[in-house]
Image (cartoon, rainbow, N blue to C red):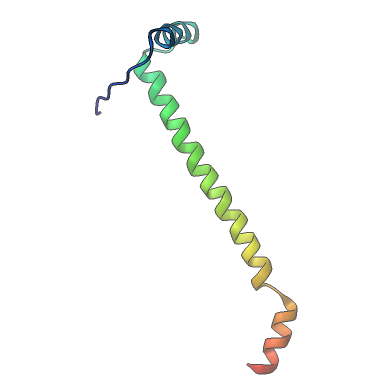
Length: 75
């Protein structure tokens, strides 16, 4: 694993310590790692959601029976 360093204002650092103790996280690193993984996964899910919506919209445009009837006259 690669080590990274973050700096927090004193007050936020204290809040983080309290939160980690209250939620029984094994360490600050574990908590921050989970946050990062959660955020990355959420972004992937959002992108996939938009791609699904775009695909559905395209299907509506391309799967058009009227177009099929018109084009069948010329093809």
